[in-house]
Image (cartoon, rainbow, N blue to C red; front, side):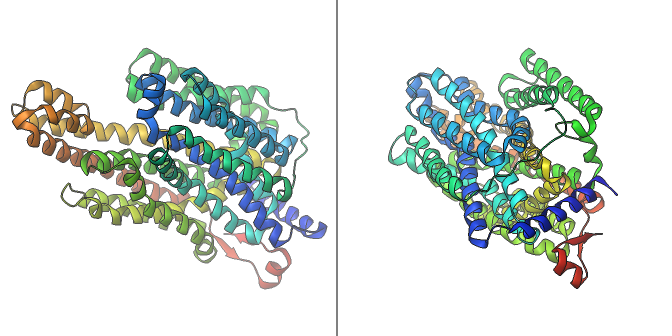
Length: 537
């Protein structure tokens, strides 16, 4: 019997035991789901919320652009680095205590960040916020997978993935509203309010669960995982800013890769006593789900890198209006996440994932083919909707494939692995698709401006479309030429990045068809009624 099948058998036995002991009623389960999704929303909204306030932070603290980016990125860095260790600790100490402790830490740190008098205090508060978020995020999914019975687990995971995928856009929109009507400090009111609500509901409705282990905590594995994640995420975040060949970038890359290799070797040595049994990546579910989430979240992050400059610098929209323009994609993603479990029950997880990947790839192709300056927002909206639907359909079965590959006592680790994969995908997509966009833009704008406008204005325009629009005011008679060339060049860069995304999604589609999670088939009627399970094919 494979490890994955063993995990499924164990899960079935756990579900039968839960029914025998009196499983939570429907109302309790519903309140639990609302509580963990509210906590998740607080974490996700804080990832993207400060992006809309970069100019305000620079003015408030007299900070450089590098410092402002660190204020934003250090939260994600701390979150990603601590997910695996804290997820494993939550499995041992109890998921409800870990969730409550995380909410308290995260809430206090968010309040301090909102009141921060200096950039240094803000940075410290954001680091602590990231640690609190790492206590919360894996536990929210682990609570679902360890509490909900088999028949309702998929739908609950669909809701969770919808919030995880679309919550960032919703949080960004609410943050943009707060910045417009008040100031940047009000951005932290939203996560604090969500924390208070989630804390009150968690104390009442979230059941406690913890798993005993016959092995000591894998301290070496935890430490090496932290070093590996920090090194690799740092490279992806700072490489585009500092340069891919800068000494600090190369050192971080070497440290990250070396720590990753050490982690794998050590975990193979520890086997069942490991923090994460890397042998499980031989299983279709864990490997297929992880690769799908890595790619899909990378492409989504890359799309946002492209869309915001297009809406703001090319179309001239405000931050609030630009964020609102992303809402149809987020809504489509959330609706499709809710539909995915029902579709997977009919056609199988692998087929649902493949359909989602195909839809997302089609969305990228639509955006690449039809985007234009004159076409504006309508030229990209159909592609955005197709992309949102595709992401929603692929995320839910991918998440369930990951959590279903690890036994119940490792659900905190499974959930953390799911979250780490998302964070890596996001950083990778921003770095790679952002680099393709920049390279395509610079090449196109050089061709259009060479010998046409003054050299100083052309040099400024090469830095980015927003820089070109700003410099156009001082370009005299060349103003319209400069703006038009920059906008058209951005569209050229957009198309280059999107076609690269289409190619990546095509490879992923073929991989999932060949090596995706096995499609479930309905069990015989009497067995299904007895166990509520499905048999793998």
